[in-house]
Length: 113
Length: 114
Image: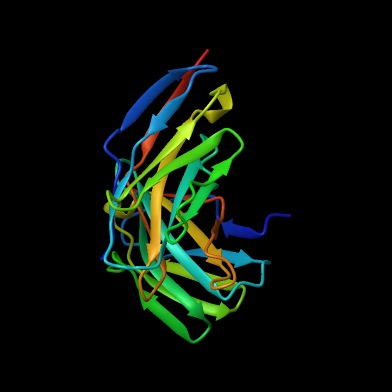
C-alpha cells in the first residue's frame, strides 16, 4: 500500500462548485504540504502544516483552504472553483528534522470547466 | 526567499550517453538542502538525489551525480549511461529557511532517444 494517498485521482467539476481533495498518510509524519503543479511553472506551495494545530499559508493560498483533521489527514478545499485552478495537485509529507526529504502522493488531476 | 532557476526547458540525449541538467539557486540561508526530483509520465514525484549544503563532497546515486558549486550557487545533475526509463521531467528544488519548505524550479523535460 502507498504511504501517501490522494483522493480522487482525477476530478472534473464546474465553475462555482466546492471541491475537496483529500490526502492521507501512513508514514507517521507530522509535516504535510499541498502543492499545485502547472505546466511550465513547476510546483508551488499552497498550504503547509507542521502539526495538527499549526497550519500556514504558502505562496499561492488565495482561493484555497485546508483542514488538518488528524496527524494522518490533510484536506484541501476549493470553496468556489474557477477554471484557472485547473492543475495537478500534490500532497507531500516529511519527518523533518529527522530527514529533509519530502514524500509525495500520486497527485490529483483537477479540471474546472 | 529562495529561488530556483532551470534554464533548459527541454533536453534530449541518446541512450547510453551522458547528459547534464543545469540548476542555479539563490538563498540567504547558511543551512539548506538541494534536491533533484524526477517526474515520469506516471506523474509521480520521485527523489533522485539530495545534497546537504554544508557538505563539500558531491552526492552520487548510481548513474546520477551532482556538481555542487556553492559559491556559484549551481547544482547540476549528471546522468550517465542514459536509459529510456530516464525520460521524464526533472525538477531542481531547494529546502531551507525558518519554514523549511521546498522551492522548485520550473523543470527540464528530458527525452532519452533509442
